[in-house]
Image (cartoon, rainbow, N blue to C red; front, side, top):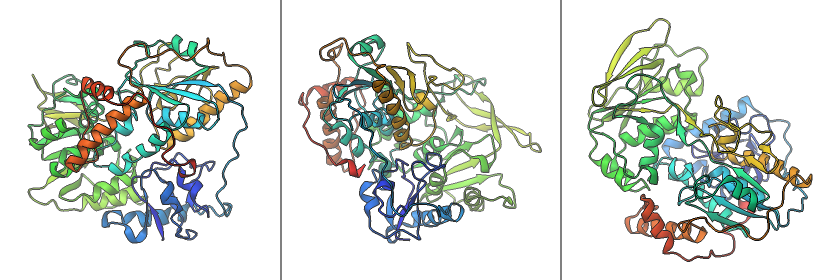
Length: 537
């Protein structure tokens, strides 16, 4: 197999359009696109041209001869996909969909949220000459979870920022960062100054367990913990008690695995990443030797993806174990359960840190007086309803994200989304990303999501349903600390410069005031031009 898709795949399908022989699937328009955990290269038709590698924003595609030992399982994973999905009816060449012919000259759009969903929406709009897009965010830095959510040991995934820098470089693009809608600007201000507003505000909070003891010190959200080790300014002063030997993570999605890996990683290896310096200092003194990852359901229903499980199983210097695995592999074995069965058969190495995956277990109560000392759990299998208390000083819930209501927009409290029709809330107001579809999918999923929303917006433009701005240019930032593109690039360069001195990708500035000071140190205008052409995205 000449080329192989590996763990960092973001499913944005740039590689699909770059491939001259249409050997990467599922492709946009196919039933499974946006639903699979990654894309796959067909070994029968790949011609080893390497075009896919130039298009991939996260370096997920590699020649089979360049795979590391940890990546070798992806060779069989790619091949195996086509055993179940032969795609015999596909055309011999990748098909580029026709471009929409819309006159959007003078169209002015505000995007609220500078994460992947917002920036993909901006990119779709800026394909049309004469469109201007202003992207707002309450933080002084953009990229959302791509900056503050991706684990520091996944630097390959963070390379998606190269794509976002290309979006920023397009004519018609501008930032208004460090600007909170509802505080610094109102929804009405955006509607007055723009033809349309797209809300891509994501899901900023976490779900609750709803059990006794959840408010004790030592019980926290994995969402907040991830933000802390990634240098999110809202969590720069947060402290976590890492003085016990065991931590428990409730939930078994990719975020739970991220947290478990970071808590058990060698701090020296993390020191070569962009992890927050404060988090790194805390992890250097951490006494945690074991992280237990709890899932309510069985191994086959685990929420983490197969690529992330493969990466976990390949960790060096950390034991990854499965507790309570049945003696025989279930008859309906899947690649995921086969890997878990292999982990269950491992013998622990004395003295190593360990990650223990435990299934069919639910939390009942967090134990402690003035801080967490344990977690009472109950088995969920019909024949093992046993109750026990796990000694622990840190409990992190990783059971999903949830969005806040957006002022002025309807909100479905059950799904945590804004009701919409293909992204249209009403003519002139739209949603994209998790506030639109809920916390699901991958970074690249936001691309097709944004395409649908922008298509609805352009439908309304063509139908004459959008109200023209009141006149003149959009009002300047409503406060003196709004950060424009020049300010963000000054922050970016300062972080990268410090990173170069330390042999790291960047050293993040974690305090809001320090971020604003760095922004003020840069030029007010942005350089023109693009970093790479559309054909590479």
